[in-house]
Image (cartoon, rainbow, N blue to C red):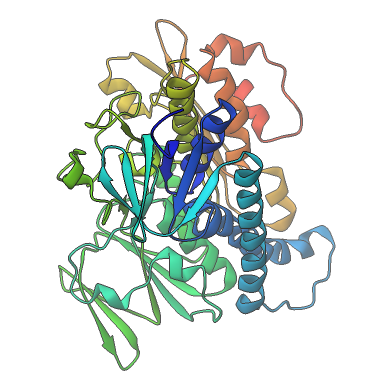
Length: 451
């Protein structure tokens, strides 16, 4: 019997922490998990899940607008944000109950309270010291707060999810996932939405053809885009909140969403005191490929490491850690090929290299693309288009990346990711029979390279 209270103590009961703890318990480890907030973490409680519920709600606006084109007569609808928020809260509460049950069923001990490292094997939880042979940090991320005067007048996505009154005017600061998703959601609800960001296009790091088309689609949906806007000051005014940019431009709104990135959630963990190295710039915990920190008994997975801030990645890293440490099956997560979706409106799905990144990596690329108006939009009179782009290495014929924007792109990219992860070539796509009539069939009907 070990001299420690547990074989593993996990700090943080989010997606990565729960996955790692349950997997370690399956391997026979005695596991405790610490959580100072609600079980389920960002994704379940204040991120992916509630955000997507709101996205579904906002899309009813499209359905109501398109219905007459399909023969339906619709009484002018009304929207109640308070009712939606209450329904969302009931669902996240249900999911938290499920997460607690999963931990209990796996015989993982839940220790509720804020945790702080005492030494390489000991955690303090509200004055109680608990020890383990290994410690896993899975505390995720938290909204960033850049040095902008008056930024405390803005809210983060956490608070936005709890609004019960629809803002007439919403200013979204930022150009990443959170910014474009909530801009689309609240525009669908009926708010006047302005999205302001420093760059020339939203979604830095994505393929430029996708970024350009997203900007066009968002503008057509009524989101007022303000590229080149670098906020320096927020202040209250007679008309709400006044946001001033570095160039003197001013935007006024009733509610301001600060979606200016997220940072690893490492405050108050006692990392420096026990020798866990943290990146000075990002605040991320430095880890080896097998998620080990600079202290041999302490590991970290998920957003707190800033490797790839995505829920499925955190889960995969957590399970790989548990298999390596408690099942004597060493393995690491390959971060080079990760499929992802952005639930903007229209949605985006992507995997692999963008065209500029493929060229920068030394590939001679051939690009295949399809740009079309989806069938559903024809009777509705909607002008919004879909776009699909496949990037191929000209020498090997291997598919290097795929980038989609349009309805159901997140669903489509998941299936396509299987093939690309297995090393699919363009010839493999070509010999795949199409499913007609679908938008996804365009991916296997691309025959002529872009000039």
